[in-house]
Length: 507
Ligand code: BG6
Image (tube, rainbow, N blue to C red; front, side):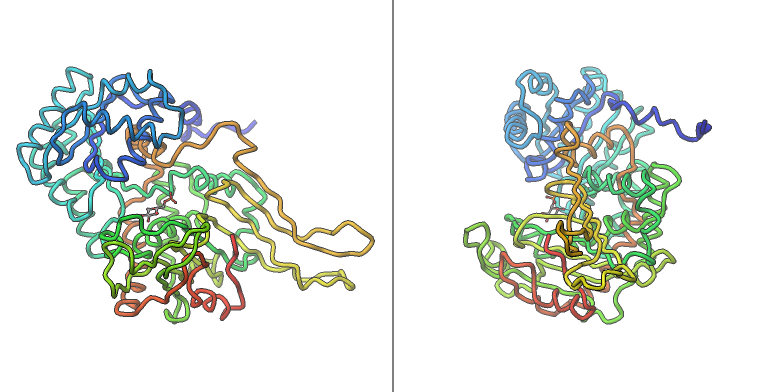
C-alpha cells in the first residue's frame, strides 16, 4: 500500500466547499463584465448551493438607484446570461441580499456610506467583516478606488475582524513599468496574500484539464519534450470584433489584451514541470520558471506577425473593418491580430518553437493548444505513399467542443498498405454528465474561499510583460498588415511559419 503523504489531504478537495458569510462588493456593476459574467456567476453559485446564507452582493456605481433598481438589473442579467436554469426560488433568496450604494469613485461620502453598509451587514447578515472588492473598472480608475478603500480602512483585514480581499481584472498595467506601479499600489493597500489577479482562462475547465492530462497519466509526460515534440501551436481565435470596446482596445491591441495574459498562461501550463502539489505556491513556482525562460525570436520582423481586420464576411453577414468601428481613429495602427514565435530555454524545450496567435474577426471562435510531434524516424512501408502523412498531434481543445484529440496515422482497410491520418477524440460533453462551470463561477468561488491556486501572482504578470514589452517597442510606429474579416489572419503570419517549413493548423 502506498503510504499517505502527510503533507496532502486529498479529502479537502473532494467536496465543494461553501465560503463563510461575506459580501462581494462590485465596482463597475453597470458594465458589461458584471452583467454578462459576474452577476450570472453569482446566480449560478447560488443555484448550485455554493453560497452561504449570509452572502451579500453589493453594487457600487454612479447611478441614482436604490437596492431594488440594482436588484432588477441583477435579475435580468442572471436570467439572460446564467449557465444554469433560472429558478425564481433561488432568485428570491438571493434578492434579499442584494444591496446598492450610489456614488462616484472620487466621492468620499459614498465610500463612507459603503463602509457603514458593510458594518450594518455584520448585524443583519452576520458577514463578520468578510468582504471581497471586485474592481471591474477601467485601469485608470484603480488608484482612486484603492485609495478610497485605504482611507476608509475598508482594505484593512486586521482592523475589520474578518478577511478583506481585492480582485483585480486584467489588464494589469500597460507595460512592465506601469504593472510594477499598479502591483506596488495594490500590495500596499491590501496585504499581498489578499490580492487576487484574475486571468479567467485559468478558470476554464479544459485549461485545468491540461494539468490532469499531463500529470495524472503516464502516457504523455515521457514524450512531452524536445526529443519528441516538433513544435507547439497555441491559438485563441475569435469571430467577434471589438464589441463596442474601442476606447480600451485602441490603447491595448491584441498583444496586450490577450497574448500578455491568456496565451502566456496557456504556454506556461503546457511547458511547466510537475508542481510538488496542486496548490497556489507550487503551481506559481513552476509557471513562473517557464515565463522567465521564454526567449523572443532573434529577428522580431521574421518571428512575429501583426494584423488589423478589414471588412469582410462572417457567418453570411457583411462586417465592417476595424477602422470603421465606432470610436476607432481613422488612421489607427492598433493590431487586432498578433502572432509570435517564442522559445523556452530549458533542457526540456530547447529548440522547440512555441507559436502563439490570437485574432479578432477570424472565421470562428476557437482556443486550442496543439502539441505537434516529430515525424517517425523511419517508415518500413516501402510501397506506401507516406507524403500525405502528417505529424502526430495532441490537441487540447479549450473551447468550444471542449476535449482532447489525438491525430495519428492508421491503415486504410483493404489489401494495400495505405496509411491515412485519423483522429481519436475525447469530448467533455459525451464523457461526463455534469456540465462545466463557467470560468468566472469557479474563480469567484475561489476568491470567497481564499484559494489562490488559479490566480497569477505579480511576478508572473511582470515576467509576461518582459515578453510583450519588446514586441510592442518593435511594433511601435509600424502599420498593422490588413487581413479580411473571416480569414485566418494576415499573410505575414503564414509567411512566418512557411520560413520554418511549417503551417498553421486550421482548427
Ligand atoms: C478577454 C479579452 O480577456 O477575453 C477579450 O479582453 C476577449 O477581448 C475575451 O474577447 C475572450 O474570452 P473568452 O472566454 O470568450 O474566450
